[in-house]
Image 1 (cartoon, helix red, strand yellow):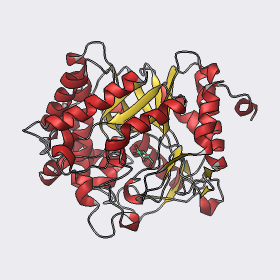
Image 2 (image 1 turned 90 degrees about the vertical axis):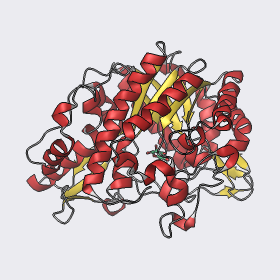
Image 3 (image 1 turned 180 degrees about the horizontal axis):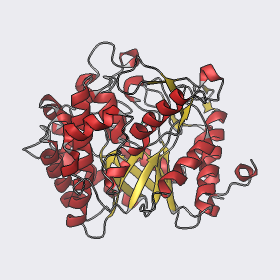
Length: 451
Ligand code: BGC
């Protein structure tokens, strides 16, 4: 693909924002430091068998204490944007009620350091770590969520709004609602259709309301929210597989963005889950409240999915046909690598017509890295970024208002239920000594960003 070989960062234009993203739970550690309360993940990770290798996020990669050094890394790699999330349980240890001044102070220090180094901060308000006290009350499935979240958002806006212009409301609502409340793989480990549907609805309401709160508090803010997306392909060209792919597509790609755009939840008489969701949430009453005119939409595309009809899977009646079994290129997590599909997803979001600006708020891949004589030669990751960045450029050149690309992620970190085994960093971290080693992909980025 010639595009890829000629790839130059300058082709994206001088206003294009190149960044790197992290999240609080995956990086900070210091899980009880300075008055922080427990999060749902601190508790979930203690349950036997939930996290690979029994890993816990208590220390993670110690970002709480090493953030100055890590921001120097961001700078050294040539990024101009730093996206991070706020741990709700540092600000409000019980989720509601009393504010923890020391938690507030930490993010002031972090933001100040970004500004000192000339890095533009993007704050994610919620990246999957909920105060444990709120999870005990039902978490995202509780009808109180909107009230709890609104207060948290308001506090953050009042505290940091004078320094930070860029805000992201929720990170991938499909991720934490489905994995947390339906599939039981993430905190809080629940497996209930009705909790899942409640969580979906509360997340949809919080997305729009979060946008409104930031807009009311900070009139000049640049406000977005992020969605995961994955093109879904039928395994075989049969009616059953095609219908299975369509159902999965609705869940993975349309369920959250369409309410934000004012279309309400998708409808499809062939997919009984949707009818249940409409009834369960009384969706017709909330169409307007789920809508918000975001300045940008963040897209995060980690894989393309191939599915086949499978009547044993409740509601969805579809299951994945793994990339490895189809001999398709894939990452260490088995996720299919397909940059053309990424390009198509960007175009597809753009085709809604009402999205003003798109940012790739995360992009990256896990590979089996080896640290050998002080070097990580992660050629596969470099190749991945070359292909995906070329695909983004193609979409941009075809008219998509694509304004940024944030690599996932700065350092190897706590990869949720995969523990420390899945490595996405541009920098290797020895989890015992916390020593950082920039990988070849980090150097590749540094050099690429100069072109
Ligand atoms: C999440 C990240 C996660 C990454 C890789 C994204 O869905 O936002 O927190 O580390 O995927 O799994």
